[in-house]
Length: 169
Length: 276
Image (cartoon, rainbow over the protein chains, first blue to last red):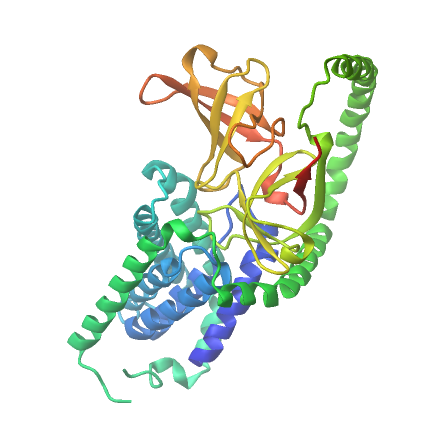
């Protein structure tokens, strides 16, 4: 997948995330589709592309959703990097492994988000953050990956640019 | 492209991250203003969002139809029973209302209750992208007379307030957002407190700083108090579920279930002026 195409996909996902996804809310929670894209992108491409495209996707999200500029950029950069660490260590052909990785990376990214929230003076008690936001989002994301991973993986495998040839800073 | 050494890349990256964190910290109190780029993005995206949210609603309705059908008959029976009870209540209410009007005229008394509000209706075309905050984007903006700090309600109760406005959209900070605070009081015993949102948006809010000897009971109603300049008096907020002691020991906190269903927020009313 070309980086520009990835960012376009992020934009479309972002619109879905703020609109139609509200009909997929379970007990007030919804999956974070943009984060899922960033994590799987990192997993299939490696740390460098994962972090860079995560950062770009985050900037895009910050622009569209307003609020604190940079919050999502940093969070999703971390998520992309974390997922990239799994590229050569984990077996790619198994969706359960991908879902497990998504769980871990979502937890990591949301913890970073929580710390950044404290730096912009939005106090959320740590127990509530874990119980009401971080853990449910991580489980929901992992569940979504279980369903969509096969399609996305096929999409990436059919594309020669997924070996990091386009981006060499 | 020339290749940078890993150390240089890391150094550049650290600088970018530090700049963003510092910038974010400094601009944290100033999120009420959108940059021109952000407001243009929002105005451009709003028709797309509106189409997608309407389509999503239709699809969701279609998929959930068999389940709803099953629930409807049970619901119908309950409603019929309620109608009987409410009819009886209504006749009493009419009596009391007539008396109230008469007494108010005698006293030349003025209130700012919901019946005297001038409103502009709007549709919700977008919600927050994450599970931390609770915001809604509505499809009316500056062009329709919406301004910052206007209060947003539904016929059921309080929704939130407008935080920033573009030409054709406005962002509403919902009362379930952890950044929101509303001065309220318990309708039954007039105990004042502040209603704050909880991260995670589960349709519950906390009413904090209630004096211990005025602790509300389960089922008590909470309405806005009108203290402070933003929210008018008497807008229903929610019912008390549980009351517990705060850590300091001096105050109590009540967990409220809101009257508005924030997971199904579709049409809202923005209060544009109050007729006194």
